[in-house]
Length: 146
Image (cartoon, rainbow, N blue to C red; front, side):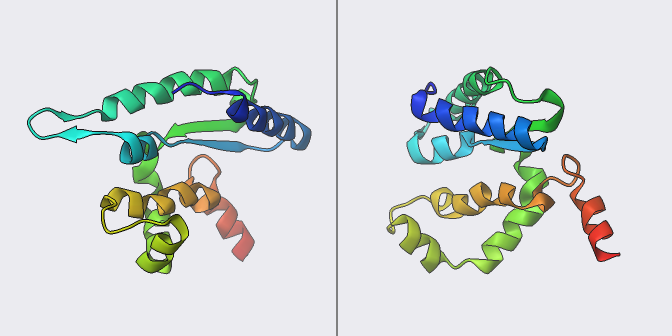
């Protein structure tokens, strides 16, 4: 649904930090999470993923209105960008057990596999390797090795 004050305050604080520190910013739009946790699938009818993707567009408009530096902000939809983050996601999957995810998030045997896999997708933007083009992660990594 729409953003509320509880969403807006952290974004305004983040916008202030971006300007104060003159730094790049990545904003993850978790349309996939909304669908995995709130979406529906009906045999013969299909699912409502497109509905959650449309909410992401509306939320993005609200976030853009916070005044982030256009040249230093990368706002993305997981559904659209996840392929580029996939190597980072796979590394997270390899390093975290299903028991850890289940215990942290309280999943039971009834949770769909997307819910169990999602924490790695949500964590991936914490690593610059998820954004090799946006943040020049490969270039910076090579410079750090020299």
